[in-house]
Image 1 (cartoon, one colour):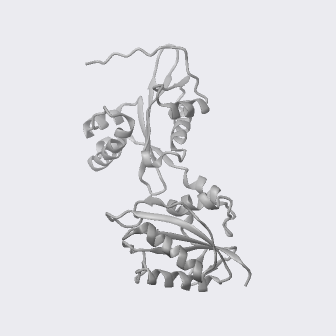
Image 2 (tube, helix red, strand yellow):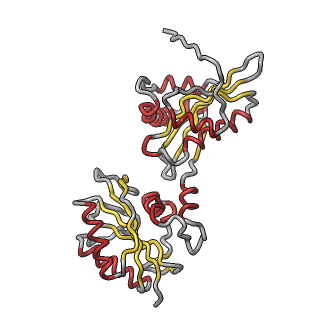
Amino acid sequence: MSLQTAVIALGANLGDREETIHRACRLLAKTVGPLRACSPLVETQPVGFSSAHTFLNGVALFDTTLDAHALLDATEAVERRLGRTCKSHDGAYADRTIDLDLIMLGRTVCADERLTLPHPRYHNRRFVLEPLMAVAPEMADPVSRLTVAQMMERLNRPRIDALPPQVADDAEALTAACADINALLPALTAHAAPLTPATLAALLRNAMTTIYLCRDEEERVAGMATLCLCASPTGTKAWVEDVVVRPDCRGRGYGAALIAHLTAESRRMGAKSINLTSKPQREAANRLYQRMGFVLRETNVYRKESQ
């Protein structure tokens, strides 16, 4: 059989995770074929189940002449040698000393009771795509034809929704929204007081204020921004406030997505101008605003606390 590139995802959340993953790579190189590249390892939260143990995840590329099923046999043999004797079944996941998933094998496409290639869910798994981006961004999926970089770009497109006013009248939804927003506030400012359900309800009932939440591919709240409309004799102005992205989600373009979304919403609502304020020390944020067409005005902002 001709030489092909095998993409194998590696993960572990028990024991000496890093050593186990490196040992798995060494064992695979002896049975599968030469190791071409191994990605940096990333720390991730468990997906599909709850655990106090976080994962280390990575991706390794091997040159191999094995066919898909022989390759699957080889990965399962390494798993057993490293202490994993029970595979996940029917969506029931658990802690593991090692997890090896065959993601791709060259341009092989197959689907049977043992194996589906390419892996049917890897394009939605950040813990696979991020490491793969580090070693093979231009590798293309043989079915979708998308490159890893293109799949990563799609994964990084967040869902942005306005918190609807009716949440104010739903106690359960209001409490959940409060928890989401309060989890973001420490990343916005060290001085913000926790939001209460009553305060949030009042904000949601204010027709001139809209809170937008940004969610990642796992439906977790990853960011927030607030749009405030101000009607005046010189026209309605929009103010974008409280733009924040969860620290572990930065670098994905969520901040830019929030600003672009609120800009479009402002225009739809008839705002004459779109304004925001930012401290000089927020250098990364200020660069983002300038890239998105905001111009730093030669004016001073005067502020007085009401209390």
